[in-house]
Image 1: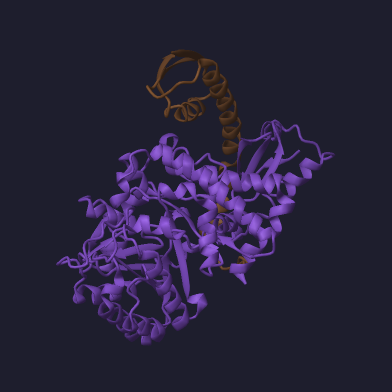
Image 2: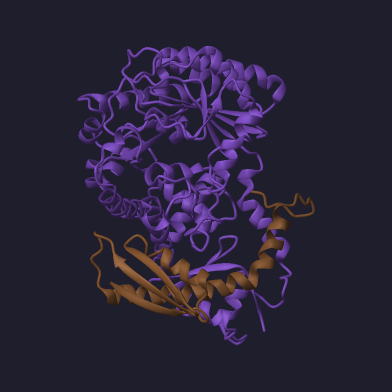
Length: 469
Length: 99
């Protein structure tokens, strides 16, 4: 006789995938879930002991290990303990580039009224310090934030001043296209140990085509080199965005990153905001992106097999969810969702938004995810009526389609994306391209673990350890 | 259009609804209840081009899988509640897992 512990399952290739409440997974013969509930398993079977050891069944109604399970569950959700840790400051909407996929609806460099008011900025920094989190990340975004170095400096000086008594751990990140990394900007970065997050789309022709400039690649590469020289190699990271033309160049993009001295890449799909909404077939794009991701990951695995350590960051995040008890800081893959709980945006327009994508929607005239004014109280912004409304549908554990999904532990809720693509925060999983994309990626990674475990596990373990060390 | 009649004494409303939910990307589905017999009509949406056999096979598989899942959920409901209470009730007696 045995008792059941909470788990979910799905048919997976020629087997069944079982995942328990804390994210442990087990591949079993087809029909295992049915055999479990019908009490057909016997103690003589290896499967019985595998299920017992992996918290799918218990010999007692309340398992003796329930406190261990509870501790693991709490650890998985530890990102909630400190509440909002990532504070994004959109200092300006002005930009010096014309990226074809711009999601932020950036404006011309000479545009008027698109910079954040200094008074708003200082109030926003004060709001940030109301967060109970011991670790605060100030991320400067745009537009192109390097166009307003005086605001970067003012924000950091204010934060440092408040932190004299607050004693929090502060991390500064500058999201920049690296074209305008002047002596002044780099001097601020050096003084305050600012991390540079830049973007490189791949080889020269592809990158320049995406940016709508003929010489942008050279400028970005030169900017990255300057930043590394001034700040150190480890202070500069890069993101790529998979534009439609990029879908044809998975290997070339990886090689461009390697040639430019990067040891990792973050494969990032286009998001349906700003100029990117002009893409006219998201279903086709999603299908192609999934294939692109698989090809790129395969190529990266081959590179690692040759002895070169090169990470794919999105895969690493998923692996950390699958293979470790720890939560990840990536706000797109959290439940409850990252909005408000982990991230908030202080926008150039003087308002606070629930996430980066929320302020992007606002540029299209949709203020659904505007929490209020920077002048409002912390309580009304972070615990107000709007935040409570978002909470109705921000947990995968409770929404239709996700609540029964075995991949729930590895995924996250995204009411903003649901709203922007499907017209409701709750969303509809059967037609959700986000669900389709995440599911395909997680299943691909699980398939690699299942079918090529001996080959990929040492590589994946290195990826996880590389970041945990 | 595919019509299926499901015995509600075998598959609950919850199980049927969950199985139907995942078909709504390709089909308009209507329900009609007559005693314990629930009749489902699957009308393909314009972009749907699969044959009825594929739909029937998938739907019946889903029904069975959701029924098994429902049993797991029902049997573990209380334990899951205890687990969440223990995890999030600010009990300081738990051993923390540190990175």
